[in-house]
Length: 126
Image (cartoon, rainbow, N blue to C red; front, side, top):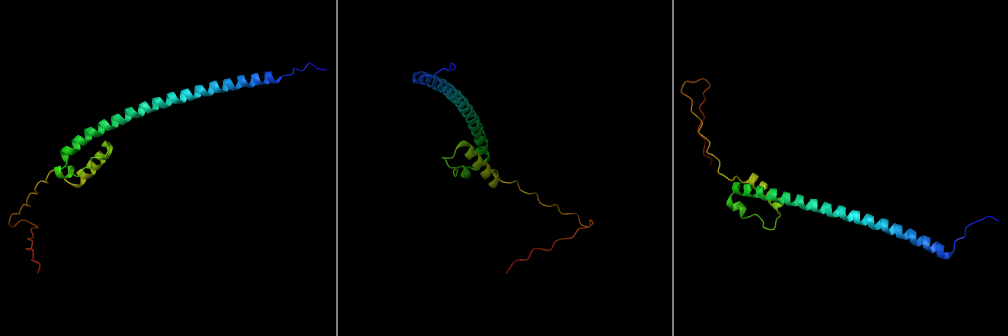
């Protein structure tokens, strides 16, 4: 007969236990790496959100100076800073913050100038 190595149940149990322990260790390391990457990503996200909020607050202050106070009373308090910026941009575009300058009168050409055609007076509607 050949020299074949025979394994007992205890030998198999030990090998399986070792293999499971190695896999568990590898799995635990992967979990730790993933958790560390998640923490780093969350910290970066928090930094970006803070920068976005700071920029939005600065823009809100600028837009509030441009808007009519009556419009500012309509600004909902529960909006986030970026949402307030969007609201104020829209409001600033729809309602002028300052009254428009008066349009100067059209100059009347001198009598005898070429191409001068006087306009007929406006008719009153009945």
